[in-house]
Image 1: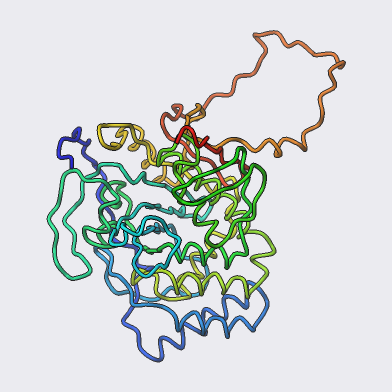
Image 2 (image 1 turned 60 degrees about the vertical axis):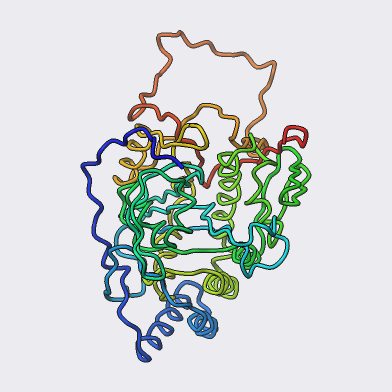
Length: 423
């Protein structure tokens, strides 16, 4: 594909050792019972409803065999409570149609095993913020030497699209690629397919999404009129997969569309209706373990609870969704190295990313309804003029971000439909 990439700048920062708190010892009967009891206790503490213990047993019994991540070694299961320190969790969405049934696009792509969604969640050391980085699928990146799920070692390549890494060496290879690209150690990883996305949205009870202009996408069979929609199941999946029906029709437009959904999902999950409902909480956990392949470090239900507890008190404005900065090249995209270095240094320092305030054709639109609570302006009221020299100027804390686009979970945005004639 492309070995003709612009040389990447060398990083002085080495990839860190996998954090101790995410590693698991080899399981045994006693340990499994302890995990179930610990997870049940955590939910009882959070929700105050002891019946959740039964749901915990149901979830624990559903966990599939784990996947080893690069550099991962065995370690102690974390005690109940939020995780100690920061963490990085990779979420990969597979485009494989195998075993997914009808309704997921072109059946000729049945054998495809591409990671068309690759997201990295970073939780700050003090649990004050979280950043989710989406990596555009067509971005040419170096792929390191990988050990696949079959135990075979695959040679490194200097430039392939990031969405080929899953096919190349499985989830472990995708994790190794993102780890090398970002300089951030990845302690946890999960792989989800189409059915899993639909099941998770059903478990939440639906996600309210704003549509600014009609979305019609014949490739995903999505047809949504402008307005607010409660999306779940197949319709939620179609919304997350649509590319031609939103923004500028690119994968960057799809990422922006996904950020609209994810921001609303975070608001839904943090609502009292979700956090206070143990059946809903464990429906979500059940859907996760039934429909995901998890790294070894993420196998334990109490590990999942610990990560959730680290996230639950983060203010919405401190949960930021950002697109990894890229620019167009022939046949795909390439990292904007300067912007990417700045972004990853900011994230590694546990600081909130500074987003580009400029306009871009792939971006979603601000929700006009969010301004409805502002006080009306009286057109006849006198306007107080302030001399130019007295106008206060707020200094930015650093250089203005360039080519780093996204939003935080407190921002209400709407997906912008793309006319069929432009598709």
